[in-house]
Image 1 (spheres, one colour):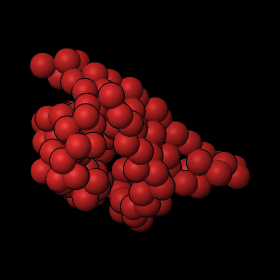
Image 2: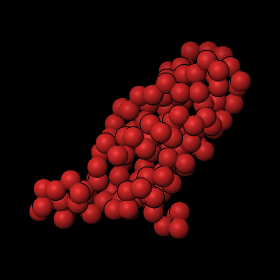
Image 3: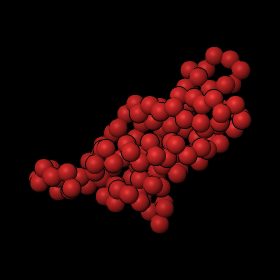
Length: 122
């Protein structure tokens, strides 16, 4: 079993419960941890046997473009797509952070962390 981490993906997106957030937008940071069997790519050195990081990034980017009210919903949606499009991933953890959320005071970020197994979506 191997672990792949894609950290610090930054996006400008339009997620939030307040209508202003869905119009003005905000910065988001995403960290992704994927657990997969790496035994085959360790031997073959072939990208087709491994989790393609670019595919994972493009999937996250695509989902970030679809508005959501809640970070929980967005996080779950991203994980569901990851398991569908990257079949060798067995377990994944995502951290979605909204930078400078509009909470009425200085807050650096608010984050939601979800961890799921492939079987959670079957």
